[in-house]
Structures are given as structure tokens and as C-alpha cells.
Image (cartoon, helix red, strand yellow):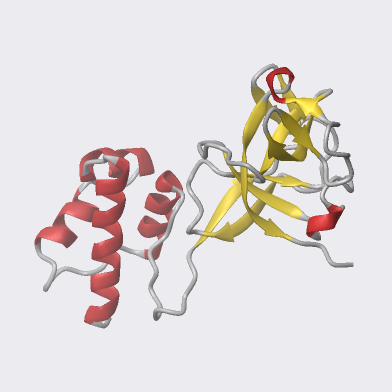
Length: 195
């Protein structure tokens, strides 16, 4: 195995432990593998074998990430849940959904989720039925952002124009009052259905 792969795996292990605040022992315990899997590799990097693909996959499941083993053009992927409804302050997958999770590039924050658009509220932005919005629940909305609002039990994309939430179809003084509608995050990416 090339040293390049060893460096990539070691960098991924260190980045994940630092970023997630995990020790090697705690991470391995959560993954159901021996703690020496990581510690031996990192301590004796030059002579140690890279952890097995199975061990790396188990570690990756815990942190929702995987090491980039190929060249710089490889894209890390992450699985995010798809939500359509809400109950109280919680997002929900209730109802019959054809998709419960989708895979997106790994540069989205770990707690992002997806909403599949089923209306024409944002047709003027080329976001129509079948388009998928990747939503970050931790972003503070700014004027003009697409936000996910809870309306009548459904998660609906609207345009943030305080004090209102609007569709692109509303007139300038029509819409939902911001104070009356729960917000569930800001769309940070759109995967648009063109046909």
C-alpha cells in the first residue's frame, strides 16, 4: 500500500477525532472494534498496516464520513435524511415516502437534511416539483434566503423577507407572518429537477 493512502487515512482519523471530540478508544468502542485499531496505526505509522476496509467502514458509520483513499478528485459522500413533515418542533418522515435518505457530497454539515419540493412556490428560482433542497438547521436566515417553514404539518420552502415568508408567486405584501410559522433551517444547496 502506498504511503499516500496511509497519509490520507491517518489525516482522516486525526481530523475526525479532533472535529468530533473523540478519543481513539471511544470511537473504536462505538464502532465495535478494538481500540488498538487506531492507536497502533497512528503510533507506528511507518511500519503499521492501514486498518482494514471493514474497520474503516465501521469507524465511518459512527462519524458519518469516510476517508478519501483515491486522488484529489475523489468526492466524499454523506447520507442525509429526507423530511417532508413536522410534528411540534420535530421533523418527521411520516406518510408514504419513496425516498428516506439521499447521498450528497460530504462537504455539507453533518446535521443537514433534505426536503423534496412538491409545489411550485419557487418556480421563479428554477426550483420546482421534484427538486431537492439540502437544508442546514443551524444557519441564521438572511434576507432573500430560501428557508424551510412548517405550514399545516408540512415542510415548505419559502423566501425569507422579514417580517414575511413568501413564495415567488406572492405579491409584495402577501405571505405568512414570520412570527406565526416555525422555521426548520436554511436551504444551502438545490438539486434541481429540470424535467
